[in-house]
Image (cartoon, rainbow, N blue to C red; front, side):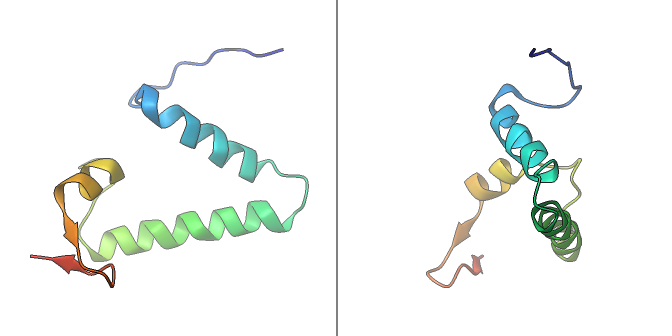
Length: 76
C-alpha cells in the first residue's frame, strides 16, 4: 500500500531521485546500500571542497549554470 509523505524542501522533479536513493539504501544485497552510503559521503566531501553547501544550491542549478570542458573540468 503506497502512502504519500510530504517533505519540506524537496521539489517535485527531485522525487524520482529520492525514490531511487531510497531503493538503493533498502536493497536486499548488503553491498548495494553500503556503496550508496559511501557514494553519498563522497559527494558531501566533494561538494565541500568546491564550497558548495547542499542548502545553497541544487545539483541541477550547478550543472545548468556552469560549463565544463571535454575532461569534465569547470571552465571559468
